Image (tube, rainbow, N blue to C red; front, side, top):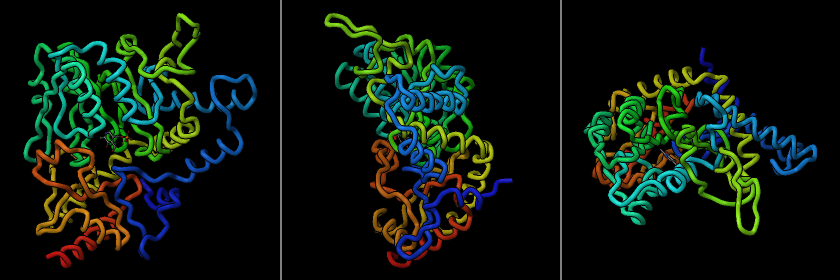
Length: 406
Ligand code: PLP
């Protein structure tokens, strides 16, 4: 039995007030709140167990290294990777995708080669590919979403041509909530010799992930959306792809030996982790992932599906709210505009007065905004601790905004 009140009690910030009202936190798509055990783990790591990792021979360095390296195994379990060495730890999805762009794609792709993207990618899964377009003439091919915001996997596969080298695609849109059938895309793309990078920044938050079953080459996650600290994250890399990669960043920790005239790199995955990492952030992420796995990803998905259905129903009752994206398969992420002239920023300001935190703007998804023909939307994005009562609070606050702007 999913005990949402017990879960809420784990998150101290949820009991605070904002603007004199109880906080209704619906900005999880941007960043999620942290349970006390993550906060405690961070404090303990700094107060009792802190040192740099990998380098020292002293007690604290060994302890910090052990705590930090344990997280690699936790991430592998979370993603069901076959081996923890298939995990490169980093500061989040942005670093993960750049690692693949610089380390795998840049040395391999030539002028005229193609990368397929969906129109609903986050800028983190667009701009690194623009670098390749600008710098080496790689062609970006865009796949549109259908009118309901869904993305037909066949449309992605149909875009594959003889020059296609990579498909870079989100598992779940941060704007529309659309869930993409990445498994079908990966399996067919593999048959055709095309690599697939899955942006799991949102997907891994809302559903169980099994990278072996999906069959992807790369799968990126970002810790702060997974109830962990900011500047933590990881990318799963299929071992054959990892063997093809060259390091993107150079520095300490990623080498075995450095001399005046040569450098010998460390073994993978360390080879892709230059410099002092986010030691404490990663330790916090490990605790957050254990927390999610203890609740159970299936249970989280079920709880959020009920929230999604309830929100869909409540918003459908407001005929002056235009919800963008009504795909049959979607996460509890709702982007909307209000009929009339009100800008998304004004709406979010009214909601904020009622203690409701939503995001307003372009959501780092410029091409999608162009495709939808809207300048900005408000986005309410739910997490494992949200409740139906909070959906009601959102709807009441929207009614107020509608009255004010009508
Ligand atoms: N991809 C998606 C779908 C996202 O929602 C986000 C964050 O909003 C990112 C990538 C980038 O994540 P980060 O800024 O943590 O690197």
